[in-house]
Image (cartoon, rainbow, N blue to C red; front, top):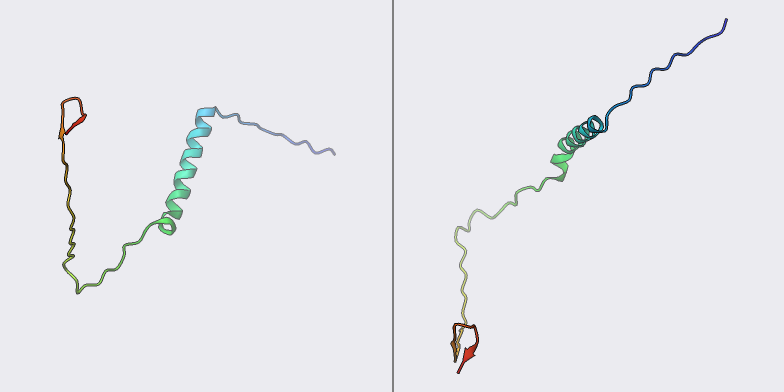
Length: 72
C-alpha cells in the first residue's frame, strides 16, 4: 500500500499580504506599548510656584531700512 500526499497551495495577492503584515505589526505594537511608554514624572507636591528671573539688555545703535540694511 502506498501513501499519497495531497498538497494544497494558496497564493495570496501582495495587497492581502501587506494588509496582514500591517495588522500583525499593529497587534505586536499594541502588546509591547506598555513597555515602551513614557511614564509621568512624580513632582514634589509642596512646590506650587516656579520663579524665573531673566536679566539682560538688548540695544541697537542704528536704524533698519526697508531693504534690511543697517544705517548709522
